[in-house]
Image (cartoon, rainbow, N blue to C red; front, top):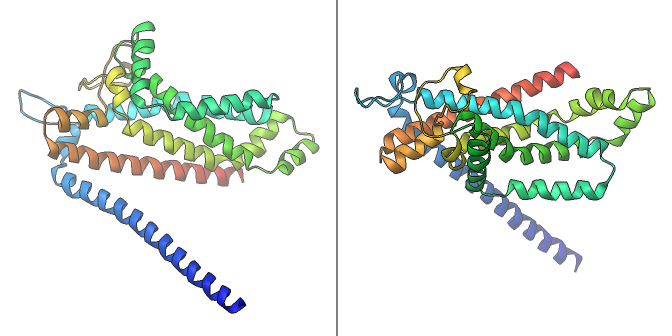
Length: 287
């Protein structure tokens, strides 16, 4: 009887392992196939002229330099604003807040905000930042809208990372005479760098891939903007995703759309690698 049960369990384990490997292989295959197809369709249409000029109807050229710069501007502005807010809110909720009921309500609210469709954020951003605060259709209005969109992600990932830090670390630092903020800054935060970086990467992914909200707030202009112009109200600019939508849906230029998609993949990869490298160096420095 025992041998029969043992054989049955082994068969079930093998079947489950096989299904697990098949699922993992299917996911990896789909990912590689998607990336490979985008690169196959997009890379042949990428040139130096394509990435270093702006579009011109008179010359009949298609350039995406303004879209690349606008994407970088929005990423930087959004992260500069959302990281202190999100990490600070997570630290307060996990380390300072005493009323656990209120904390649970706030956690539920952040989870709900994270699931709201981006088109609704775009509508709210247009009504609040574009019209009420008179920022106009601009990169700043788009960045503020994306801050609200990505704030729940930063808060939740940082908060979950803070919960994994053992209480003994806090008690040991406090027992040695460290103040609470000094303990959080020197003991807790270095332990959750990976969680903060994960939230940062997820936020960047959402910022880079967002188009619906930016259509209402950042606009579709293709003018080259300097750094001072990018942070001024009324200066509109389309990002790479907005440009991809316009070329694919409105103009039917799928070669240009696939080229932009390939550049988006490369940009996301570089940002992720840079964030991981910076986190590793910071962790070694604090260690």
